[in-house]
Image (cartoon, rainbow, N blue to C red; front, side, top):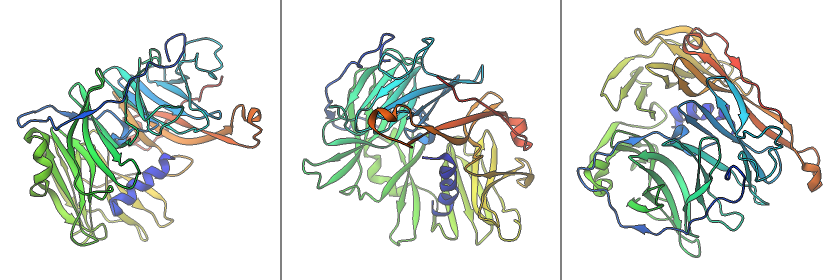
Length: 422
C-alpha cells in the first residue's frame, strides 16, 4: 500500500472520514484459549502507541530507527532497518556477504506459495511480526525477535477460526488487539478486543463488540490514557459520532459507550471530525471554524479557517508532530497539499508540501530534532523470478529520507537514504 495514497486517504477521511543467529524455524506455541473479561474498575493501566497508525503495517519505529519489510523475491519477505544515528538503511542481517535469500538470514521470512504479507510493531525492546493469514501449516500468529532480527519465537498463535482484525496498542506489559472470530462454516463473524500477554501467550477477552457478522456499527479509531475512541454511524446514514470507552471503568464500559460522546455529531459533508495521535480535530464548514483538542491534556484551540486560493477545497487539520499542524486541502489541480500553520497565529506560514507518488514526505517518526519520512516507492525486477518461469515481474520497496524539523518547517528538501544493495 503506497503511503502517498494513504495520505490521500487521510485527507479524504477528513472529508469521509532470525530466526536464531544460525537460522531455523521459530519456536512454536499452541493456540491459546481466551478467558472471560478481566479488566476491572479502577485499573488505570495506560494505553500506549506501539504501531504506525496504531495498526500492524510495513513500518515499525524503535527509539533509534525504523524497521520495514518488503518482498523482493517470490515467496519471501526481507526485513530492513533504518539507523537514525548513521542515517543508513541495511538488511536486518549482520553477516558479511549474505545473499539474504534463505532462512539462515535474520532478515528473511519464508512465506511459501501463499506469499501473504507480514505486518510489524515494536514493543518493549523487541520487534514483532504479525502473520495474519494461515500459511505453511501455521495459523495466524505473532513472532517476537531481538532488535537485530535474531532469536525468533512464536509467542501467540490464534485458533483456526480467528484472525487479527485491526488495531493494536500497548497496555502495560501486554498488548490490546482486535480479534475476528468466525464460526466453523465461516457463515458468521464477530469481533473481540483482547489483552494478550506476549511473555506467556495468555489471552483475555476485554469485551465483545455488539452485533454479529462484523456489523457492530462501531470502529476503533484511537486511544489516549485509559480511553479507547470508537466511531459510530448514527441513526441517519450520514450521521457519525465518536464515543469514549474508559477502560479504567472496567470491561462493562463498552455497554455505556453511548453515554460518553466525544465532539459533535458530524456528516462528513459539511462537518468533519478525526482522531489523530492524541488529538481530536474538527472542521465545520458552515461556521468556517477549525479546532483541535489534546485528549491527554485537555488543551483546546478553535480558530477561523484561513482563506484558500480559488478552486481549493479544505478537508480539515492534519497533526504533523509536536504542536505542529497543517491544513489538508485539494488544490485547483486536485493535488493533496499540506499547508503548514503557524502554531501561534494559526495562519498559513507560506510553506506548502504537495503530496505525490514521487514525493510523499509522509512523516513516519520523530527522532529528536529529525524527522524520518517516506519519500516514495521504487521498483526493481523481482529477484529469482526466472526460477519459477516468471518474466517481467516487479518488486517494490520504500525510499526514505530525513530532514530536520526546522528545514521541514521552512520548506527545505531533506536527504534521501540509499536503499541497500546485496
